[in-house]
Amino acid sequence: MKPEIHHPTSEDLFAYRDGELSSERRSLIEAHVLACRHCRDQIDEMSALESDLKLRPDGVDAAYFETMTESVLSRVASAPPPEPEAMVPIERRRPIAPDEEFGTRRRLRMPWIGIAGTGAAAVAVALVAVLLLNRQDEWVRAPRPDMVGSRGEAKADRDAAGSKARERRDAGRTSAGTADGALQKPAARTEEKKKVVAILEKPAATPALEPQVVAGSALRGAKDEASKQIANETSGNDAARDIREGEVGFAEPEAQQKRSASAPAPSLAFGRAPGEPYARVLREHGLPVLWDEGVPTDALLSAEPDLRLVYQTRKAGADSARIRLYIAEAERAKIGNPPDRSRVESVAHHYRRAIALARGDAELQAIARRRLGELLMTAPPANAEPESGETDDLPPTEP
Amino acid sequence: MAQARPDRSTLSDGELVRLIQNGETDAFAELVRRTDRSGYRLARRITRNHDDADDVLQESYVKAYRALDRFAPDRAFGPWFLTIVARTALTWIRDSKRRAAEPLDEPGRDGKAPLAERVADPSFDPGAAERRAQVERAFARLSEDHRVVLALRVEGDLPYAAIAEALSIPLGTVMSRLARARESLVEILNELREAEPR
Image (cartoon, rainbow over all chains, first blue to last red; front, side, top):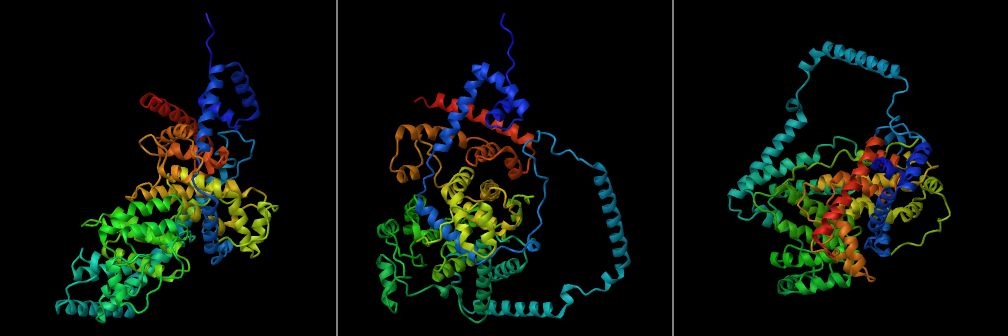
């Protein structure tokens, strides 16, 4: 009868292969592996699989990394590293010694510190509670927000502006906000815009380490746009008139030619000519270099897969921002009524990336910001505030 | 077009960080150069498409740059940076679940390598690529926890302790989760091989 063989656990076997065992345990497992074909095969199979995973081509070339590096440097150049005291505190952990055994790390070496700390915290809480109770009368006497002059005045101003806008609409305005505005009634839209401005003006819950430069700037842009649009409405300017005019695209389909006939001087929307892969898609679908409101929806939707392909095969180069704007518009055209919030968030994400990628192209940034602002007004996503909790993505402080 | 920068390839990570902290922002380019491919691959593994991986990678560099004062100059920048990539990617995919965006370049369900890969790789070897694609499909079917922990190990080549830090889990959990992930990978691959005989 063969003696029963006890194989090491998978944890031990793979940790041995990864070189993560202590010297004593490693010797033990090694002695078994050398004698056991089954375990050796298991290790070899895993090595082959992981090698296949590693060998998968990443599909990006040096040009991508060059562009990405320049993009990162331009972002960090304008934001020097903050001083240590300005950093948001994050969880500190005791560093792990290289030879430390598993399972010992969470052991509290001096438990009395924890007990004393808890006691001190309880005393502090009790002290604060007593102080607050003593000042209870002051709370009652404190002015409420709507009693404060400036806020009350601002509210009155907004009410007046809202009623003016309503009067103007009642006087015969029929089309507001073009494509996306059709989702809501005009009066409701103004109210919605106010809500968005309020959301955007609300300070972030955490100081945010600014990883979301994109989201932050986009939201700032959206806020500006929302404010501008409310101001425009009160002064009689229709937001829909904010459509950019005079731009001539790479290809000139019929609609585009009509626009260019009234444009003062035909020229590329901005100095850079489009790269060939992008230009080819534009030619095939009769699209301008830079998206505008005149692009027919069917052309937009039929071009979308080709634009995505150009983007994902890393052929986009400097046209990435323009493609992102097109993709945003294509996805936006698919937003239903009532708006699908997840799709709204996806569209907003594409706008933000277009803004971030369009460095130096103020026109594209302005369009993307305006469209993002309009999107958030007509269909605010579930989470309209800048993402919080960014610090969670940072590793703990090094010793 | 990349700017011409002084050759800093002989400097250590710590020396580069000190240069950056003294105002030579350009030195960050060298740190990026040293980690861009591994960072990209890790981000791509977790997000599963180029589009999001690009976003995650850039955000991670910005975060790393802004947190450089917390970086210990006597350590390697790479593992520290990869933990930032992992955390950023995890946040990203958590948020992505609310979006309707479809992955741009997932491995094809038709048994073929992703279109992007076929177009972008001039030395495309159909046989090897199909085998890798099968492993990729098995990898893609892992649970998120398993996928992430295995990506950190395989692409990031991170020690268990660094994975524990990146995922905020105990070392023992890293050890067991990695083992379960690898077992699952083999099981799924065997199922695929039975279902898709070559």
